[in-house]
Image (cartoon, rainbow, N blue to C red; front, side, top):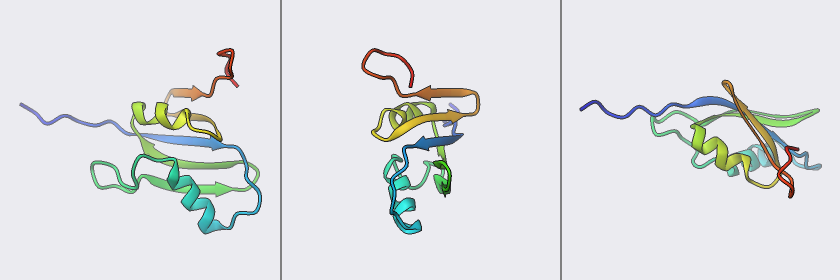
Length: 95
């Protein structure tokens, strides 16, 4: 039987901006959203952190992991290789 293949997508995670963080603090904060620092294949999960006009980072996530990250506080939404998850407000509308 062939080994199961895990499919990772390049995910853009959009976050609410928090003022007054240095680069190291921003990277650590971005890492805190991810399930682990490495994928099951041993690749770095966090690929790039940005904190300019929009606080965001790129990471390797499975579809299920993207759903979990999308539900975390301060996450505005996730866009990844054709699937997109946005946070819902209390009435179920997409924000």
